Amino acid sequence: MSGRSGARPLAGGRVSDYDYVLPPGRIARYPTERRDASRLLVVQRGPGGRNAAGGAPLEGSGPEEEFRHLRFRDLAELVRPGDVLVVNESRVLPGRLLGRKPTGAPSEVLLLRPTDDADPADPLTWEALVRPGGKLKPGRRVVVADDLEIEVVGSSAGGGRIVRLVTPGSALDALEKHGHIPLPPYLERDDEAVDRERYQTVYARVSGSVAAPTAGLHFTPELLTALLHEGVRRVAISLDIGVATFRPVEVEDPAGHEMHAERWRIGPEAAAVVNQARGAGGRCWAVGTTVVRTLESAADEHGVVNPGSGFTRLFIRPPYRFRVVDALITNFHLPRSTLLMLVAAFTGHGRTMEAYRTAIREGYRFYSYGDAMAVL
Image (tube, rainbow, N blue to C red; front, side, top):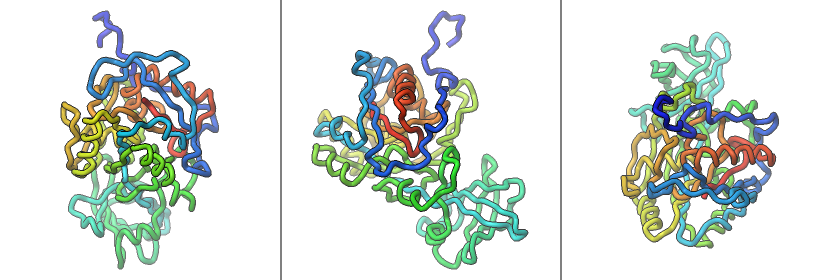
């Protein structure tokens, strides 16, 4: 709003409102020894957070009630019988391919997603990012191994490429054999054997993401069983996470930021379970921002989740009235990111930034392999 109108500017209405300083060494470069041994900061939603029915901002609780410090394995203390836990079952594709041009120069190809006309069972053509971009023009090839080459066949939006995998066998088998897990650059290391397991959720099933739905990395089979015994149902949806999700917003006005499209899918059974649970008074727990965006993209104005599939560009930021999600599990996100803005829309901007200051002060670990928050 214009300052000339006399109205107070919206808290969280500028990208700079999402800046914070993370001390050196707080980025978790490796996972904890056990998934559910990570810490869990429990946060009560504050003023500015909107309830799932789209009502007025929630009242803030007292300072002693705002934050609790648990371990992730204690999540069973927070749920209620009749709640539903919604997870993203998308699996990270080992789509980082390292090779050389015929000249011997090193090259890198990051597969983003199969093209629309590719065979889903054996996708040979992909949208991709390449390095060095100026050298890998259509017609060039990259040799990854004796049984895998990559041919650049065209250009795509945003400086990307359309590439074809040349292999005598299955394309997916070739990727499993020669591909690398595309770790976030802030980890400042190449992927290692541990990442093949730990940069996937235990329920990952549908390949298609270039990054993990990190809020789900903390779950173990034992914890999922404990939640089931507490009367919590679990359903899976999928959203294929793209590389643009984690990029900082480069403009001061969030309205000027363009979200990249990501593919989502919700089956009829998953939609029915969510609708039944909420209709009976249960809470919908979203495991991660990707689940939030999927559910909110599929819901109608009454909060009913419709099954289906499609692409979403939904950019959730303050102010936003949530139609489906009642509780959120999420990791700690990069400054100025759309993910942090989504958390602020749910939690309230002031409460979110105070939670981050608390996490920094209390020594929490940040980002993909870091600790988590539960927002109620």
